[in-house]
Amino acid sequence: MNVLRFKFSLPALLILLFSFQIQSCKQKNNDGEIQTAIATKTQTDPSFAGVNATVKDGIVTLTGQCNDAPCKTNAEQAVKDIKGVKKVVNNITVAPVVVTADDPLKASVNQTLANYQGVQADVQDGVVTLRGEIKKDRLQQLMMDLNALKPKKIDNQLVIK
Image 1 (cartoon, rainbow, N blue to C red):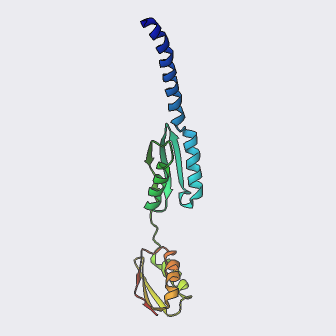
Image 2: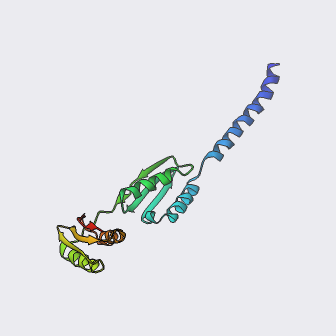
Image 3: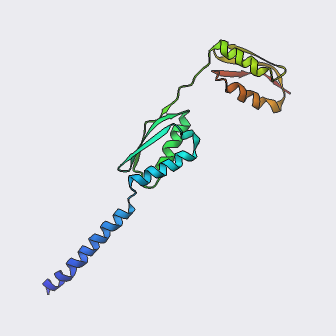
């Protein structure tokens, strides 16, 4: 009787183990699929243009450069959300802030302010100090134009009309 039970239980046990093995293989996401998912995510977000990723055994290593710290954090989070990623090693560097020297900055500020009547500026140690008056609807564009010149800081002392 024991031999009969063994004959029936051994095949059942083997089938159970084999099906468990197949099921566990289906749940794993291979490195190629992860790499493809990363490429898709990074191509849709232009802020990840300088970011590269390598995948080995589900561990993703990010390298390259971002313009700011939020870009670095967002890249890591985007990769963590991909199915099959076990761990993310974030070796992305943040690009240093480039501050323009005073003389070229002053010339660029003056050229920009030619489009904004009633606004004057002083430049010292990379800091642009704005004086004068400006219409409320023009302030945002002025600030964007000046920030594009990469000053260390803009001290806005303008009177808004």
